[in-house]
Image 1 (spheres, rainbow, N blue to C red):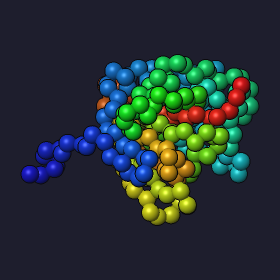
Image 2: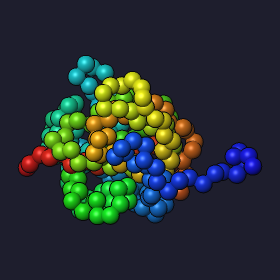
Image 3: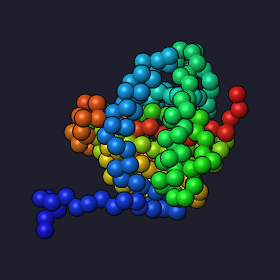
Image 4: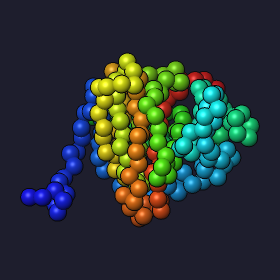
Length: 222
């Protein structure tokens, strides 16, 4: 039977590395639409979505807006001192509940019960945007990172904790997919070398591009 004619079913859950779990199709279409609507509101402000400028003068190809805490290379602040100096939007309770449900879906049992994310980094990729391999290490907490994908599919490269080289695994993330990494994989290098334009469903409310929402515990007070 040709896979070109008959799409093979996707697995319910895959452990890509110890503590790194891919759950395909976790977000319903209705929930994806709700998230797109919320992200559009956050993108308008009080701190608008922007291309982050790196300390070396480079500019990230993705556009980012933050909720709860503002991320600027390489620290978190309550005000967007590198944009307009305003406080970022508050982190809503419903987003924390979604994060707890995501961790439970990935790890099972009551794994998500103690998960308390207090920031979301929302990245928008157009068809040419990419994200180099990096570690999420600006947080003081070792709690898992929850990653949600909406819109165009992408190649997500999940590596090791030692460096940007091999071994790594390329995973296709599709709209609605959940990816959680924690435990031994919490500080693994990861990135998005390529977005696959035109693969998203307009029914999500996203006409093109990829929306990636990552939830984290900063471990910061105040």
